[in-house]
Length: 387
Image (cartoon, rainbow, N blue to C red; front, side):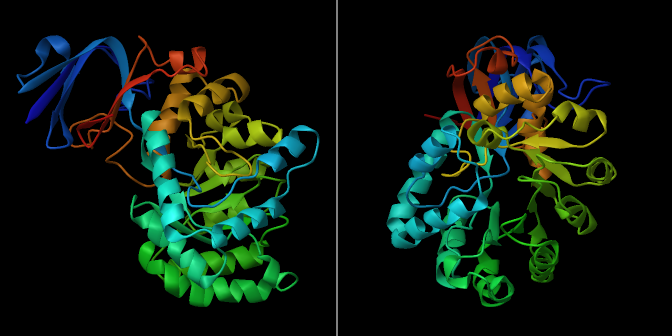
């Protein structure tokens, strides 16, 4: 069955035209057939369809592509958040408390919570999500986290090298042996990506290289957490190994920015983290002007960014990181798709998946202009309306 969505006041296609990266059309229409976009253009020129949906002169954007999340975990860290708001500094070691809660949870408990988070994200317009492991940190627990994630998304990342678990304290190299050996053996079949937290308090550059190269040898593509807590060499390691993305990038040197600008590696910014940890926001204006490809993601996790709202992240990126609304929406859609090396999502163009978001507003600007307001009116995932 063909469905025509018409009377769209502003359509963000992300098919660049000249200097307009968003490829914006006005008075537009979109035709959906068999879960894909079949036609895009002026409403007055739209083809006939079996079903017609009136967008009511509202704005439409591609479904959000959240390329960085940690959705499979037990417990929460509300007390840690409260302490941080009272002045305690954020440190990577808090991850270990979530590891303990996750290990104690059953598969069914983790699965139910995961599906709850996905429903929450979908209601806010996120139609594609990447999910990392990293809260098991044992062979059996990491295997079940990637296995559960693989039930709901093809974008699964093995992050056994999140932090060194308590039982390997002062034996980080031995833990890396486990990650690159038995743990990778157990997890590789369920994952598409390999990741590592290359940061003080987590893993050194040498250890991170071992993890990434082992994953690459098993057919997993690299991604890197880096430069969240301070400057380091993680960005250049990511670029050297052809990583799809380096995520966080709160503290970047000029050399880091030059390396990113001259590469295919996407820098995924996570404004929910800076909001929750009170670290300085990255200067996205500087990055974009330097030619770096930027994505936005939520980094949904219980410690440093317990939000699942891409509209919230867009609003923060516009207010505090120097992005225009058009750039922020592009980064949360097409940018996320590039961070996952996908060309079938994040755009509204013939052949792409029909993942669409209709806003209860005349323009995408309202995502930043009206922060905290539930503007997502209708979501289509693979051509089917959700909710």
